[in-house]
Image 1 (tube, rainbow, N blue to C red):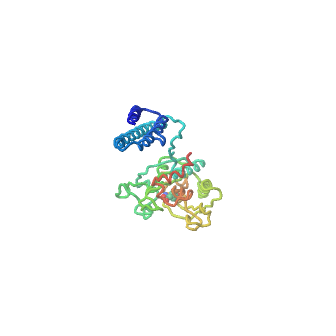
Image 2: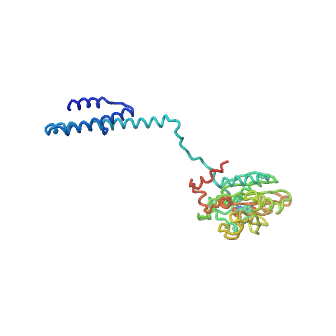
Image 3: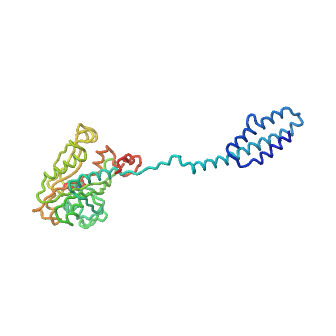
Length: 344
Ligand code: DAH
């Protein structure tokens, strides 16, 4: 028995680098249910008590040697095999990666721009940090007039009024820049970000986005204003969307109006988006006040025109049924990725 064990011990010690199949044969030969070790233990039962003491120890050591060898080789083989698999197997599926998507506000802004471009409007932009003149005074907001409180302003520099510097509260400031720097006719839309000192909630934010519109030429009338905006709404929300104009007040337009559209969610029958009125307001508009034209060195006897301003968030909310303004700026991928299919 000692001889057999010595012989196999040598064999095990010499057994080194191997393939998976060879290792499996090794296991069956030594550790299998009909293997050598099992056999030796059977023989062990038959030896006398004296020999049992010596052989018991030797046999256990031999069994341990075989097991350790097997485990070591299995481990080295396993690691190597896995490495080879991931580097070498070109048929494995590739790893997917998320593609970006356009922000819903950009999608809607681009759509608004497209509609007005087809009507011959150009796109213009102005600065987000504005002086008092462009944000208020040129637009006919008299100094110390309560109309300035219509919009809670973030001031960067606040002195006498005239030299104030602020984050623009609306894109109407770009109208002034456009008229000051050019000659009529003007036909432009002006998208951009605006700021107001408001507590952030589902319905209000300290920054949001507007698109301003301006059309100045000879003989422009309120009928032109109505037809332009009516056409815009049919393009944006679909044929048959109703519009209505309500008289309103803005310092820079006279007369002024707010325009409502029939609720795009319930089609006018009443839902909580339209507060059960069937209508939702989407923009302010009016005929540009002659004072504003004169402030920008435009002859108000010769030229007339209309202007309008809309909030992109509001229009997006109606289009995609989004009820919380904060979603637009939180960058939650679960929200943003829902607009993935619309990449252009
Ligand atoms: N500037 C206005 C606001 O922030 C919106 C507006 C109303 C713009 C009437 C206009 C207009 O050009 O004619 O609420």
